[in-house]
Length: 172
Image (cartoon, rainbow, N blue to C red; front, side, top):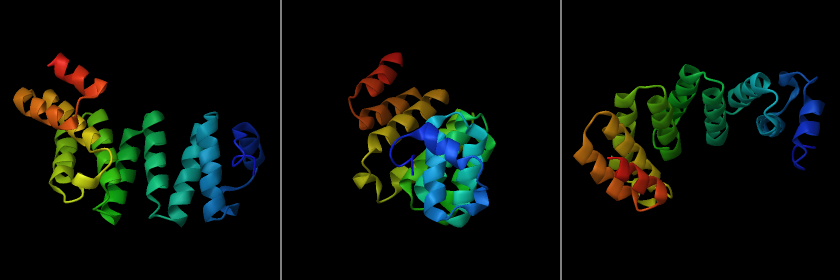
């Protein structure tokens, strides 16, 4: 398929006349990815990712991509619902819970975001999570929004010393 070869426009052109129901599980994910990469078909991308998720609801990557696409198309409520369903299916997934916290914070629900981040930090998996600095940094941002600056500084210290974290600390 053209999408797999990196020719996103050709792959999307080929797939547009085909009904979403005519794809199998693997091909619909490839087509959804193709649409997302092309960015010319955001509504179709959402539709195809939703169909992919119906056929394989446990595919974490598909759920996250759909939520990210929904956020980019300004449908935060649908993105949050998509991620909440994922967390309900797999409440131990750090990626799903982290993405849910990000979506909730972007939508203005600092309390919910903070609650999910606190659950992550308290989990036994946080020590092995490759992006744990991101979790602490996002928690710091939530605490800044709540004007809990000392607690925010503590979280930012845990996040590490990369440029983004240092910028957040400097702004305190």
